[in-house]
Length: 233
Image (cartoon, rainbow, N blue to C red; front, side, top):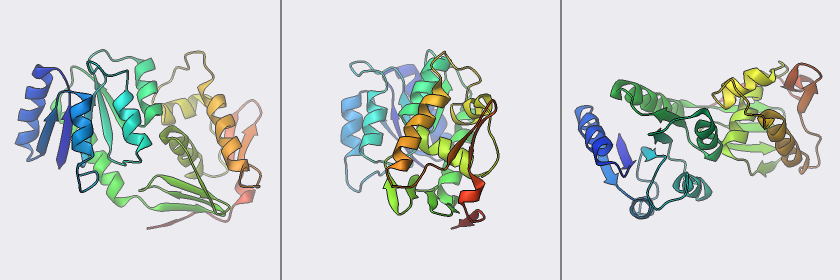
């Protein structure tokens, strides 16, 4: 496992370096966002299996490096490490493209278990085919009616949640828990806003959106629009 650790706190860096060495991980360390950018731009492209990124980096705006990584289409899994964890920050990190979020202090055993789970999923994920809708779970790309959709990591996770159980209605609270990893909507109608965004992208393909509103209950993918769901590696 090749890891890039980006953290300005020497205590956290030293501890993680020691712990990663015990499991045979190859760890490269950066203390600034600028230095991390240099490592990430080296050839071959994306030479790391995992990126551990501190939420608080001196001289770098909140989660700016994470957003840059995703804007460059780097698929390297990112785990955010936060010294001041909160539900709001967790939501922002996941929306910006983080694969996981962990607040300090934490046990290395938990970080390692989360890391290996992410890598295992990345290596074995199939493609979901539902009629004209195709979700490549490894590349995290979506095509609909032969059009590739430009989606954020959060939008992908939302549509994947619906696509894995087509025709089934998910309540807003279920979607918050499964997609945002929280049970609390901080008054921003997170689910409804994201659904509206996805519907606009899906209807650009000249097809009607398969996301259906079930009044008083939540959202679902319209099962009648699809052939039986199949998986292909």
